[in-house]
Structure formats: C-alpha cells, structure tokens
Length: 447
Ligand SMILES: Cc1ncc(COP(=O)(O)O)c(C=O)c1O
Image (cartoon, rainbow, N blue to C red; front, top):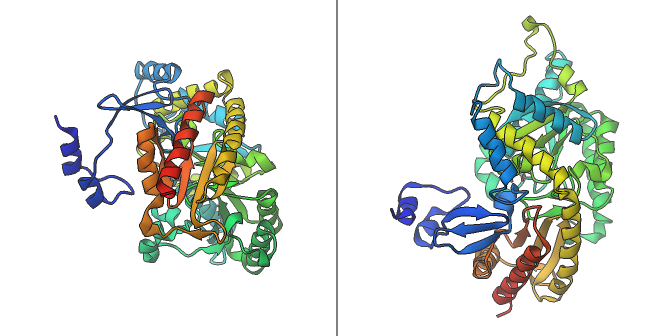
C-alpha cells in the first residue's frame, strides 16, 4: 500500500496548506522509542516538540503501555454521564493533590480547547446564578493580546492571534483585550513592560469590573504565539488585580502544565491560586486525549441547588473521562515521582541555557526565551533594530526543514523556533537537539 498517495488523496491535515502538502514530500512516522520517532523507512528523528507538547516519558514507555493494557482487560469505555468508574475517581484525587490549593473539583473533557470552553461556560454560568439571572450579571471576559486557548469558537473568542482568528471574527463573542508582556518587543518609553501591562489591566478593571466574569490567561508563558514569557511579578500582579476587583481568574495550563516550565504547574512559580484552571496535553504523558477543568469550592458550590432550580452545568462529551485515558494518566503521574521528572527538567533546562550562550553570537538570533523546557528562539532580519523577517520568507519553516537532515523534528511558530522535548530527555539527547538546531539556523540564516 502506498501510504503517501493515500494520504494525499484522502486526508486533510490541521494547520496545513494542503496545496503545498499535496506537492511536497511527507514524513510518515511509523513508531517511536524513547525520545525518538522512526519513519516508515527506518530513519530516526528526535521528537523535539514532544508530539505537540504532550510527550513526557518518551514513546513506548512500558509503564504507560501496561496501564492501558490492564485497563483494556476491564473496560475500554463507559459513559461518565450518570455513571462513575475507578480510574476517573483515582485520577481526580491525584490531580487535586498536585494542583494549586484553591482547586477542589475536576470536570473532565478530551482536549485543551474543550477544557477552556468549559472554563468559560462555568465562569459565565457561575455569575448568572450568583446574580439570580440578572441582566446586569458579569458576562464579559478579559483576554490578552496574542493569546491562544484553542480552536473551538469560545476558545477562539478569548484568543488573540490574528492569523488564526480574524476570519471568524463575526462568529465570536465580545471580549476586552489587555496587553500581555512581550519584553523583547516592548517600547521602553512606556516604562518597564510588566508594570505597563499591569497598569493597563488595572485601568480596564477599574472602569469595567462590574461587567467582567473572568480574566483568562496563559500563566508565565504564551506558547502558541511564540513562547512569550512574563517578567517576574507579572502573574502575581494579575492575581492581585483579580482579587481587588472580585473577578474570577482562569488559568490556561494546557501547555505549561505537568512540569514543562520546571514546576508541576506554572501557577506555582508565583504561588497563584486560580478559581478555574484548564489542564490537558501532558496529562496522559502524551498517550491519549484527555483534559480537565479544575475549579474552586466557591465556583463549584455556585452550581448546587434543588433539581427544580436548574443550576446544573449542562455540558458533557461522549468520551468524557474515558477510562483508558484516565488509567494512563494515573500511571503518567506516578512516573513523575519515580523517574524524578521535575528534577530532570530543571537539570536539562540548565544545560540548555548554557548551550544557548553560543547561539547568542548568531547574526540572526534576536532573542532566546526559556522557562524550564519551553524554549523559543526568535529569528530576526536585523538584530540591532529587531526587525522581523517577513512572514513570506518562511524562515522558521526553512529551519525546521533543514533540521530534518540533523535527525530532528521541530515546528516553528512564525519566526520563532520552538524546542519542547519530552521531559525525560537525557543529556546527550538534548545536546543532539541543540547542536542540530544551531547548525540548521546557521545554514538557513547565514548564506
Ligand atoms: C495554552 C493552550 N490552550 C489551549 C490549547 C488547545 O489545546 P488542544 O489543541 O488540545 O485543543 C493549546 C494548544 O496548543 C494551548 O497551547
């Protein structure tokens, strides 16, 4: 069977211009082992973006494979509407034990976008019920510039990446945009970046807090917009403003959660206590689709009442809390402890940081941003003026194509090269990834 022709004839890939895809060579992945992926010809590549920011312990991890097989021997799926099952119970208790202290309840779904969609609907309904359905209830959300919370309509509404979102503008609900600190591109005439952004947020809240249901934010790192990272104190400032004006704080930990930034959740870095938090991606170690929206007791109790009061949260998906996904998620969380994953992230992050000293000399590397093993290398046409490459030049795409020759799979975000390897990555494997990335950037940008 010629899988290439079949793919080109019958499939439609996400975030992909299919006209190019149907013309170009395709990399067809057949299997994985540890941090390596192998194509159908046996060529190997380091999984430099953890199969889209999900993989933690590597591919074909025995404990994870076994957890799924064990659960398969019991039941693959049983609905979570009106029924419960042991893996979902055990996982919920485990999630609450590792999440920020403010969070007490777990609502399952199956991907990051739905976890965020649910977070928004819960916040919205919470205020309606608290205000007894009053017209004056808090119905608006504050989002941040460049935000990305997924691809469903609600998640897109609180997003801010024009390239992905502008075509749907008429479908989206109204939001209020506050600036997210982009230190590298901030105009210093406005004062320090973090302070400037907090002042803007404060001004919005001072004027409109009575209409606002929640602030929605990616804590510490905006991933999809190009690994944009907050300066120290910023997240604490956001939390303080949420408390000052009595609005809910929703953290989107879909990308940052489960150790990527060097702590289990990015919220821990400044000890943030959210009202609602979305988690997905690495929750199953990169094995199966699962996500969770965690809420505080205060939010949860806003949905309690007599049947006739109709305060129920009327939301659910067919595969909510799929037992196989929950079983592998439990095994995944156990491995964080037994394999000292967070310690490995800290050690490898330190190693990467040292290795990046040599990148700084490259003529077209404008900024290197890193928190834990979330890394973005911003390429610029002119380092002195910080002038970006035109998007038509596809500089990021060229670099990642070149990287394939160095046995590396990575993905760019515009002009930003992203490195986000599996969290178990070993010292020599990380060196391989960094060396190949360095050579690829050099080859493409220094002609
Ligand atoms: C911060 C954040 N939120 C939400 C999502 C959406 O997750 P999913 O692709 O699983 O729907 C992503 C995906 O990259 C993300 O980075």
